[in-house]
Image (cartoon, rainbow over all chains, first blue to last red; front, side, top):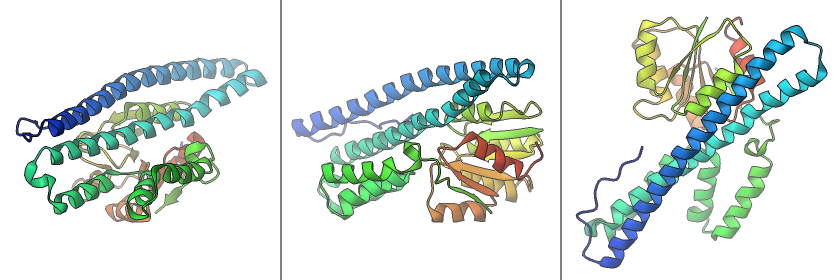
Length: 176
Length: 120
């Protein structure tokens, strides 16, 4: 759970104070949605586990039944689909963290006008990313200077041929 | 045979458990971060550990490193993460991990990787 320190020391500029409050509200909404989603997805996973377990018992006595075997395969493949929710959660968590860092910066009048703090913020946001597509999007927007639509189009094109969109041929497994 | 699964996402822990559910001889223990896992590893004898990298309190790289240096554990440690960059894999290898799988994982591949280290 991400915590926001406090905004009591906020600037005397009302527009800025409102902006910070809106950012904090957005992060709270994201966190609430993530908590609801986590609960629902977990319940769904438990249901699939239960179905898989029952099916395993059926297969013990009727192992040659092609319909049962196909159903087991379908249920097992859901494991991959469910993981996309985890990726979504992580991405939202990183967005939340970035927004809170931004709120912290703009609510401090000394930091607000200091480019060093903006650079530090940018670096912190970049370091918070764990997925390649997050780094790519950051690079396209910040380093390459692309507009949002173009950057998103490139990310989408790359993603569609990647594992994140179900292309599981490019598995990334290394043994040391 | 005991396997320790370390991930801050309850969903991912459940999915790993789900993926290994055909192996009735496996006893899966779950931990939500590296610190909890390290405490468990002090008192339990795990045949294999699967851990995420990015977790609160203690991440998977630090956990792996402490398993090797503080607890002198020799069991295989497989890192299962969304991180796919080479410098991260290098850190994992240097910490003492035996394998690296980038999420989303395919259940069959996870099982095959585990089978390269333990007999299930």
